[in-house]
Amino acid sequence: MMYDFPPFRPPSEAGSYLIRAVRGCNWNKCAFCAMYKGMKFELRKKEDVFRDIDNIPKYFPFSRTAFIGDSNPLIHPDIAEIIRYLREKRREVERVTAYARIKTVAKMPESRLREIKEAGLTRLHMGLESGDREVLELVQKGIKPEDAVEAGRKARKYFEVTYYVMTGLGGKERSERHAVNTASVINEAKPTFVRVRNFTVIEGTPIERLIGKEITLLNAREQLEELKKLIEGIKVETFFTCDHVSNYLFTRNGPIFFGVHGRLPEEKGHMLEQIEDALKTVEILEESGEKVLTSNDMYKMGLITL
Ligand code: SF4
Image 1 (cartoon, rainbow, N blue to C red):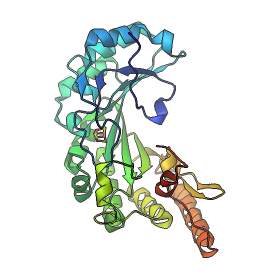
Image 2 (spheres, protein in one colour):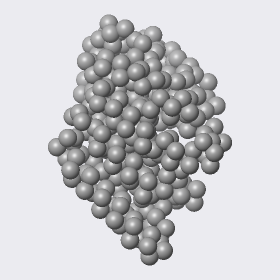
Image 3 (cartoon, protein in one colour):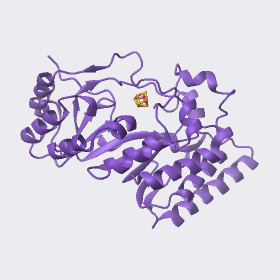
């Protein structure tokens, strides 16, 4: 039987050994998400996962990192055993990470998180998207801001934590509260990393029916203003990065903004200056009649894939 690859992994796991403990997403209702739609959620048999781990050298170049998919492998009853097996068989691995649902971690007993840490997991990637109650409900994220605070508080005792945030998700209508309340959850949850994706409407996802009604997409200037407000509101130490093409802004001649990256709070001033510079550039270009394109424009034209 062939190796069972997880179909998605974070960009930061591009060089990692990929291990699939579960298939699909056990929630699968987020209105913006196309990742596992149409895929039945399954726990893989641990013996099959072990066989994949045995076969890692046949499928991957040497790596010191490993990633476990699909969307929420922590609910696998054998996850600690799977991670222990991986650690035993691949001694070179220094970092083991997994996607996890905030709701799952918020509800999980700390003894279980400790067991998973002791097995060898080092980092969790969790989708916050927004810290605003109304936005979370609108997009059917299935979590409340207090779940995100609780999950961060618990998870940080045992792991490094990435929270993914989606700028623009509340549309123009909720831009201010989305930024302010997301920063507020980050301040309480204290994730090690904040990674930003700009909301891009994927064809066929349930959120399409809300666009132009409940949600008005942000233009380039509004996207930058929201990003600025988010960064201004973050008061805790974290590494903040827009490490995804959806954050870029473009003209017909190519990208003019690549997002901002840096350690907060030390590099906050510099990051805000970069956003101010981008705002000035957008203003000049638009005054000259040039449209600045967001990820939504580029996706619709087939010029980026997500
Ligand atoms: S965003 Fe994550 S939790 Fe939501 S449906 Fe997609 S994979 Fe599942």
